[in-house]
View 1 (cartoon, rainbow, N blue to C red):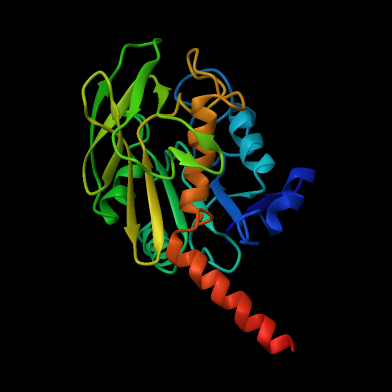
View 2 (view 1 turned 180 degrees about the horizontal axis):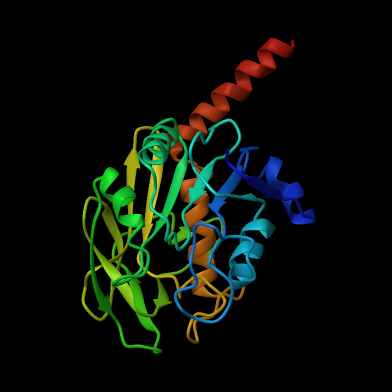
Length: 264
């Protein structure tokens, strides 16, 4: 049985609608402390609603997302959740979990996969592989020193509801080598630092570092308004499909016209 809890705060009351034509924001489901680690650093395990990701959690809540935690992604439902977040997962995904996650994304759900460098969280590898993504785990960066990731392709993650940015900071990180469209590269190596792909009706975002997003980020700030915070929020808007494309806006308009006719 999955053990799932949901965080409800005042900011979460915004979750029903946004300024984007009444599109539902939706709810994010994160693996909990039974499945995640803390990178061998100070603080709790890295998952949404933990003290170690307090800033990241609050940014999403203030943007209007709901957040829940679970010990398993088996049986995840598109009726209840809009996006899945792995966090620093250190317990292997079961074959059933991977199958259910693929079905969830194919049906229109979002997925944000975290894979740090070296032996930090190789449990993500089987899930990445299931979506056709490959990652090189030799570390990029210098220990304890933030390194820059720069925009390499225009994308809603760089310019979305959370604001606009053209770079953000990581520390040690892995490199995406295939299977995803690279939208941000390591300045130090030119390798893939953040990637995206579409899978059926859904969207996947691949992240290569944890220090960029937690509250123990080696002098990397997740304060609201910073580049890291802007990119973080836009990642979930994109994965969640709350960034409408021109085609989706047309469908929304047509749907509204149809509903209006039915009410007459």
